[in-house]
Image (cartoon, rainbow, N blue to C red; front, side, top):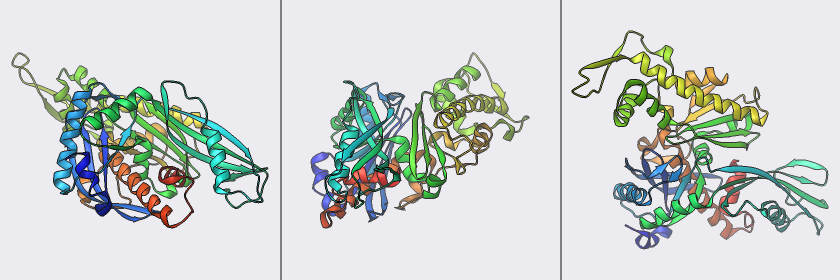
Length: 419
């Protein structure tokens, strides 16, 4: 089922699709929009997973392989849902992600600040050169300042002569974005939006209280680890770390002399992120060749390998927290999500490594339908993408009946409301 068939049903069905292209699997989820623009929700209708992927560390390395994995995953999701997908919201991550801040300043010509004034100041803040090889993915207003009054979230209707904005800009490598779009289009689907994966995941697993108090989201993926730090209801810092679950698997390959596939199976079946939780006397059978003979190893050794690498990754997360100036000022702690969050002991390790309260982030907000199919940390990105898409549709619908919201549009309003 491709693009043309899907477009015929979008108005009646309000179907949204999400695509999470990781280094170890491709996940597609289809859902129907529920709720309203202030409380978006989705009814999950279908899920499809392909174990093949041409993506490495957030970048498409093999377009043909990536295209095949998209076709397999999306078609399975469409079969389960019984409806085609009109367009796909796709997550993007990797070391090519860059962030920077920008300031916009305009004079106010009327008696009070209008939406057009806010639009102008946002345009000024985003009208900067990112380089020929980069494109703007998200722009997120941090705060507005009217004359000498700062800390303003929405200046519309206020009186002043001078309007200023502090803007957070997220950009991606143009080639990486284009290859991702090309893979989706070759699969026969239309890509609606690229969304930074940690921001999508945060929408699915974080509470508003956590965003307000201050927390750090750690998305332990297969090829990269996404970090997003929130404080006062806004995203304050975003980073992509070059180490993730694939590095844990590689460590097991070298440490236990097993194949990549066997290392992944050992990690999933017997792995643990925190060595003290494992019985030091417990043995596990290792896959072996005829020449190697029967082999065993202590489960504690496997846990030690995983513990060491994840501890290193969390040490890099700590460095990102220190960059923001928030150490000791994130009372809501750390929320770990993604495939790596399935390792037993990840909460204990995160508490120890970051000296913060910790929990595993599981999609829970605004989800109905086939909840059991997506209620796991590895589905945080895909579920967050669905909520993102739902918010976009609901904002557009609200904009048709009210002039409020015409400035930002669905994507911009979502970013401002949630980040």
